[in-house]
Image 1 (tube, one colour):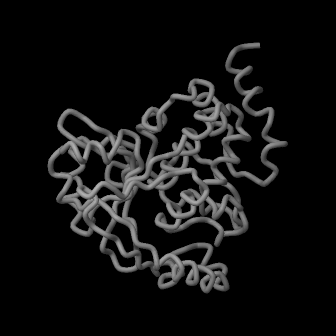
Image 2: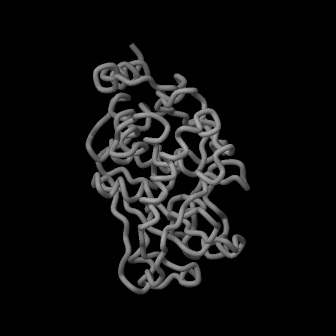
Length: 282
């Protein structure tokens, strides 16, 4: 029996017992996840995992493929949110010494859904501020909001984009009865306040900035677009010339480490106001 087959057998062995809900995926996805978990150890960083997806095509709406909500695993096509969720699930599994496909599925479900419970479309955490709040409650991540500086600004979350544009979402268009549920979630979320680093503070690589943002941290870009909280996601990467962003890029049409500094990147997006910083707990 070759080593690759042994890895697959070991990785897949606990799937049925560890995860009983329907899953949408292709064999290529399970093979990649299992190989990465087998190659990792408890010290493997989120940045290492993120770099394993460099070059993967950017494709939006990959979770909207079923009439009824299922856990979707797609490592062949990523957007900014699914990249962050995929890498976070791998990082947490590796830190806990978990190597099985079923372990990964359980961890991904815990990350993607409110309190880790998959119960239809409305149980998915659609706004990233909601994701941060929920995963902090579950102690899966920690949002950094100090020291001040560089966390000198405060975001007052005000979201209503989904309920105001239901026809833009496949599930809400098909099930208008879900719109009031989403609207109530938006109302609850719109009480949240969070400290963030304004983009002007990213111009120079100060000691305070380096202490506040670490390699592999999740970067959530705040914005002033009406009804939205977070415009884009990625991972922090420190290079010689400063902070950069590793992200699933709609512009580059793939997962990349941006060649320009993060400050330069933000200057090209006038609606971007700064960044929230989230550490994946290990």
